[in-house]
Length: 109
Image 1 (cartoon, one colour):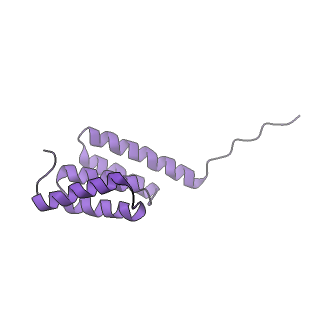
Image 2 (cartoon, helix red, strand yellow; image 1 turned 120 degrees about the vertical axis):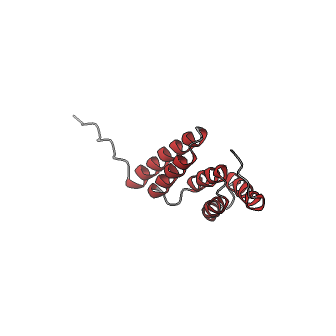
Image 3 (cartoon, one colour; image 1 turned 120 degrees about the horizontal axis):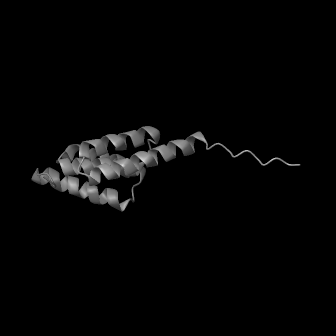
């Protein structure tokens, strides 16, 4: 008789990526509820799990844009673009942040 093979444990990197994706999903949900500071915190947790997660930087940028925190938004998008230089959503959010810096007005109230 053969025993069935033990299911393989997920590797540490895949666990960390799954954790990062969970936090990113929370970040998006919080953003959609208008809870921008909480969205930023969830994105930072995603980055702790996966420091190279460009979409987490995008979510920080978008939430900072919504809060009118233009300098923080630019910094987050630039970090994300350093990781993923061709990501359109990062480029778009960076443009919003730079426009906000010029106008010094929040996107959302």
